[in-house]
Structures are given as structure tokens and as C-alpha cells.
Length: 235
Image (cartoon, rainbow, N blue to C red; front, top):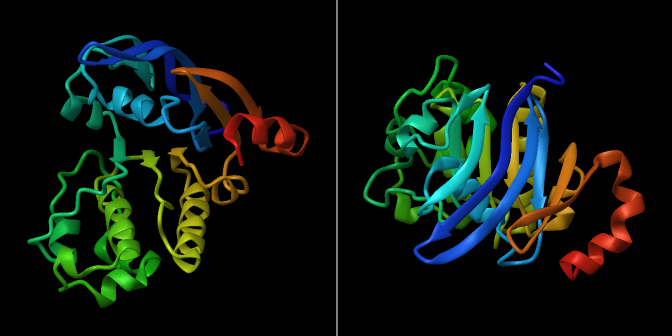
């Protein structure tokens, strides 16, 4: 799988109303890679994921998924190219049980995880299967939000700040999940503010500023880039 271009973003511009938030974003992701978007708040990282999915206002440029141009597609058609998006706000249906939330999404492609596979990866969700969404802890809600897209058969996962505000023990479990998905051949694009969480997980890092990718480097190059990264990220 290595080297097979799965996602290619070229000259991507996006707006929220009259606010121009992306200014020509360029990057690619190969099949099986884990890529992390780094940057300060407001750099355009979340807007990049949203623009890929068609969830911003106007957008122009190119978003190609396995060679298919998606820039003009509606959001549900983008998803059917095999993309699962886990937004920062999680989107758990509070009136449904954890298991009902899991069963809700449509099938996007064959090969989605079964409930048994989900419960093996997330034992907490099996214990809380009958609990309403409102009764789940923040960490359990985050696990549920990620697990829900794994049910769909999507193989390209866009994960937005999945570690934010969670206890260290939950963050550790989410890191184990990312590594397990990587071993299974999933392709992952993560937006993360928690650099300590993201650093050991990604194959490549993209640094964003003012709605553009200004640097990119590999895991092997990370030690040499740390000092400069601290300047960019303020960490």
C-alpha cells in the first residue's frame, strides 16, 4: 500500500461567509499513512478537514480521493468516497443509547467493523452499551464518536482534536487505538493541539499557519525540528 496516493489537496481555498479561512492548502496523504496537522488555534487545521468534507461555505481548488475529484461534491457524496469524519464536537445523539449511536450511520463501503470488533477495541463501550449518550463520560463519548465511523467501512479517517480535554488514561487508550488502526491499514489525518499525543503516532507532520501548509516533515526528522516547532506552536 505504501506510496499509493489516497488523498491529494491542491490549492484549496475556503470561506465561511465572507471570511477567507484557507489560502491555497497543498498536501497529500498516502494509503496507510498517519498524518498530523499542527498549528496554533486559527491556523486553519479544522477548516481544512471541514473543507475536504464540503462543510465550509464556498471552496475552490482540488480535493482528490483515490483520483476522484471531490471539490464539487456534496458532503454525503464525499463521505461515500470512503471518508469518515470525527468532528471536535463529537455529535453524539444524547437521546440514543451508546449502541444505538453505533448502529445509526449508513454503510459507506464494505468492510466496516462489526459490533464485536468495536467492543474488543473499546471495552468501555460494551459496558455502557445501554447507557444514553448524555450519561457517558467525555472519554466514552469520544470513543463512541470514533467507533461510529469505523462501523461505516470508511478507510480514510479525519480526526479532529480527539484527545482534547480528556484524562491521561483515556488519551493513552486513544493513542493505542490510532496505532491499532494504522496496523490495520487505515489512513488517518489528525488535527491535534496535544503535541505529546500526536508526536509518536504520525508518519508525517504538516505545520499550518494563516490557512496554508508552511512546513512538512517526517517522523524521522522530528528530533531536528523540535526547537523550530516550539516556536511555531508555542509549546
